[in-house]
Length: 249
Ligand SMILES: C[S@@+](CC[C@H](N)C(=O)[O-])C[C@H]1O[C@@H](n2cnc3c(N)ncnc32)[C@H](O)[C@@H]1O
Image (cartoon, rainbow, N blue to C red; front, side, top):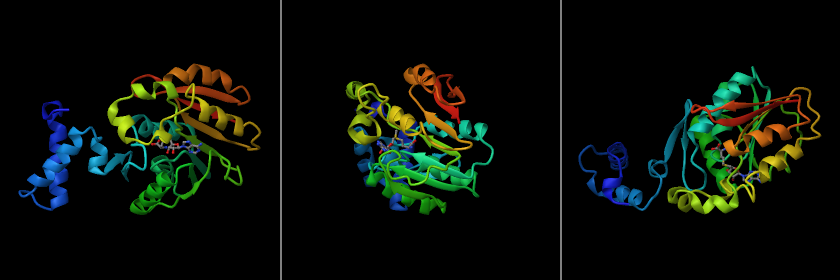
């Protein structure tokens, strides 16, 4: 990547970051040069800036975890539109903790639990809870294996959904910097979503809403696989792609 390939708005953000690091409005050139060379090496701007806005909170990001995407931010809208006041919430594959923390912010009286298989991700999620002063119970679990009681009325998940064979076609910024465990969805990309669905088959819940972020290419087939749920529908993202499954039991 040459400097010409970096758009001016990104250069402006790198300059602002250099000013923040040095605490100076004028003497920031060497810090700027260092940040610029990281960007030229392909490091995502968000990792260099170290935080991203997410809905109405701020989330720290680094290589321990996937950078929250705009689709996931929009998933918060989808959740809000599909449930009034959840009492007990679970976020599966929490990553930075962005969804779980936003749930606690929107529904302060709820009890929020969040799991991830990655201890690195969990350590960052805990930092984000502290920064935002939001209380979420974060713990390590392979999907639901360490979740003791499944008495949730809202379960949300944005699990990895990229088929292993297409990982190599991803943008270098993604594949070189973001953790593979946050991206690799197994042979057909549906490994974890199918497993979660299976784990929830016999859940004895009076009223459960499940909201999943999915890849557009999986949306229709997933929709028809939720046979034992009462009410299942697809929801679209801001660019009109089927991106979320909302199911009720
Ligand atoms: C696509 S990222 C989403 C992160 C975050 N929820 C978000 O929306 O930005 C998927 C997350 O699922 C986690 N993960 C992958 N396999 C898992 C498993 N078997 N059980 C629990 N979490 C898993 C990854 O570590 C990663 O943090």
